[in-house]
Length: 116
Length: 115
Image (cartoon, rainbow over all chains, first blue to last red; front, side, top):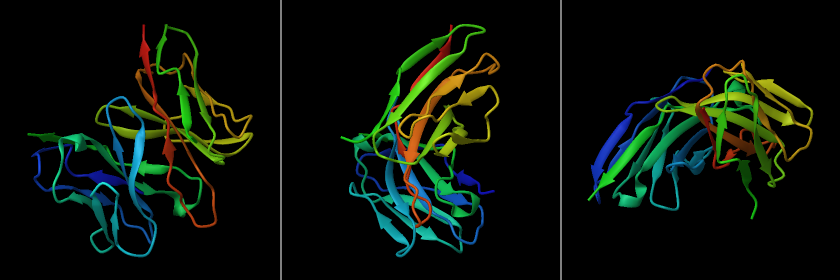
């Protein structure tokens, strides 16, 4: 079965600094990868996804992630963070041979704290 | 707007009591899921369902039960057999398609506590 490792449980940064949240998954022939964001006492919101095609995917609010098959990684980056980016971020990978309707495997999350 | 509605937002359980968490979606999604979230643990799968009247156990199904009588509804019952039920419970849904795994859409969660 797949597994996901988010290498940092907490990442504190100053506003306007760049940030990278790291995600590695266990090896598989092919995977679908997702990043979700969770604000306090809310559900998860999809930030971006890699299903196929270009290995660099972008979100509408300036985040991007790059699928690296050789490194089995899907790190999330943003060149300049805002206070409003403070949240918990989850990396997720498809399981069970990528069958539609099967659940995702989630990492334990990374708390991004942006201060002024 | 389409989405997933979980209720109640907060729920308290007494010893020996069963409680039911509601999850309704109007996204016309076939697949629905229940996750449990504990601090520092990420999300763990309790049950999922791909079609009405059918569901599968996830990684931590013991002490929980579900039903799927309607496409749009997937209630979760936390039974008295679940000895550590205090957690944040998240319901999700996704489309089924021939293109493989689709993103999951989440409700806003129910926080369950023991009285």
